[in-house]
Image (tube, rainbow, N blue to C red; front, side, top):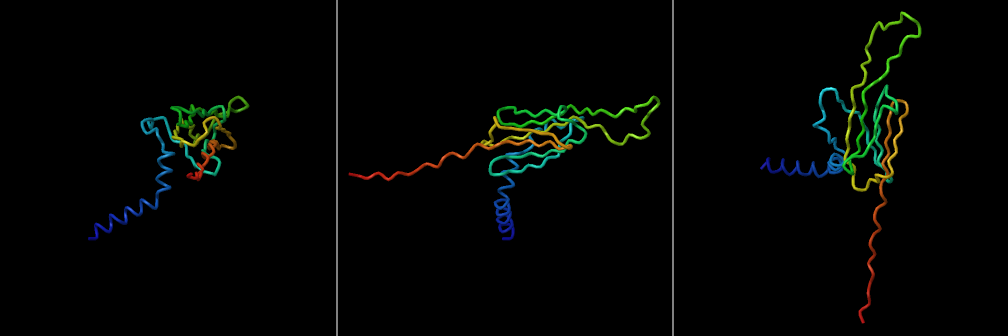
Length: 153
């Protein structure tokens, strides 16, 4: 009897986590095959507002020219970098590093399947203070159909 109750409770738990499940399906990382040596994930926060989806990604040490944001396969947002960062050279001859603890970034790659209401023609990206912000506007919801009462003669 307890196994029936446990399975019922498990079903309720998954029902109450429905928004999280939908979010995972919509914004899942679709690049599991690319997780190879030399490629790393970009940490990301995704916020949904009534009018848009906003992606915040930490990219310390990279400039906006090092990052590419594209849409592939009609609905997949792709963020990648080449993984190169310049080290500061000493201004005088004979300068050398005594310690190198900051690793240069690896190639970064992250893919997100966008929902159907994403307006692919209205995607903006900006890079500021080591944070890449990608904004994807939503299409307005379709108008609700009206019911018209017709008089029968």
